[in-house]
Image (tube, rainbow, N blue to C red):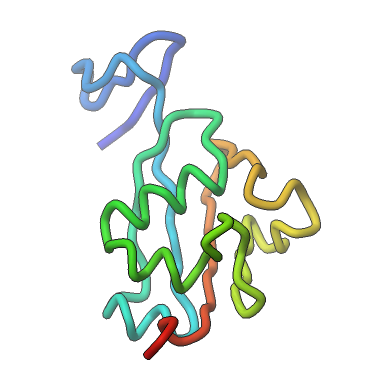
Length: 119
């Protein structure tokens, strides 16, 4: 099914499905997080201009606060054992959690984490 965008609407099969422009982000999980979530890949629909931080917020909404604690500190920074890659380069070499995710092509975010805190 073809997906088209314009400045105001998203069309699928010729019908308007959203008035906000969005795109699909493929998230690949590696390391312990793959076992914790019991999946290796998922997709998130995000508004254009979203950041890695916004994507992580959606991940926590879907999987719960405990997963968020594996990835981020209580101050909202990445845990030392967490690495996130966007289109093959680590986000720390870009703008960190504020790195924008573009809707151009396939986007993959790879997350490896340490064990759950306290457990």
